[in-house]
Length: 480
Image (cartoon, rainbow, N blue to C red; front, side):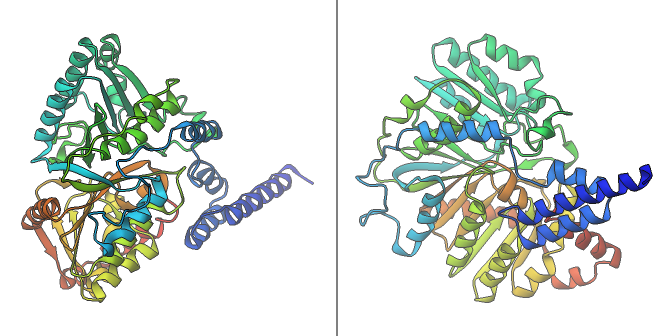
């Protein structure tokens, strides 16, 4: 047997073993299995390497073990209610209680009653508000960002943390190893450390050549969490950066929405931050989780929902689909990235088919050509169902929001795409409050007024090459 034959046999055996692993791997959609089998079978060597690098959701055994150990060590959440279950006297109407039960099944957080909250006017105002709260902090400041840039707004936060640390406030700042690599490598990172700010890196990349051996490099911490004195928290789509987002200036401005909450829900975001921090830093933060936050009565019932690759599979899709199925009058969604799984697309279409006024708003110019193409491949089916589609022209619409029947809002970091479903750690807040929901709905309407409505005729007139590109990219969704 010559060398060529031996190599062919070895490749066949390896290819067969990898395909068997694809088939036996749990929590994978049939379409994803089939797509990977086709890639492995038709692209010798390359297909196998692609699967090793990107085929499995794995952050590494050591990290999983460490994270599990940390989560088990966290004390039970102390709430302002006598039980973790939804209370009979809850301000949440019965028709929406099941939504919060879904959220509670994911993160174990019951809706926290008695919060106050306000929608920030814009990105710069959000940073200024954070700076003001950091300057007023008395005990601790916790921040976690996916992208933290050393631009004007990024440096405002740096300086605020340094001032707080100088007066004895315990400051902990964490940033994703990939998304915030420019800040981590900048002098500002060391300046914060030298000023007494405790800094840490979430999902550090390390040696890029050896990284695939311990887990996927593209599994990221996409969360945006700010907690101040355990009583104030921010939640939304905004990273720690200028809206001009100078790393991708041609898509600017980045258009985000953030809500500032004060009250018991801050403790739930504190839990998410502590679980991330203690995974990478040998520091026990459990004492900060033992004291309940006093409610600001009367207030808003709100619930933090944290998802990620080590959380229950399909958790984020369950939240989105539950909201879609609950809608009876109106559903409005904003998301920059739309690469749904089949059940998500079906749920959105079904919402429109049963007569709900259903609207979804995308950016007209997306910073990812691939994601933009995949998103547009779904337009025809959505329009046929009666979903109204708008493309925002005032910048890159980065807001991730959903309003339901003028009563319920979901806001946070999660997009309606497979990365947010399977690969990224995300944080969102679900709340019931018609007044605050009206403010979010008004912001969504501002987006619509700066958008172009996409019609069925316009989609029908797309060229064959345009449709071929969109649909081909969408086919890769289960792989990517």
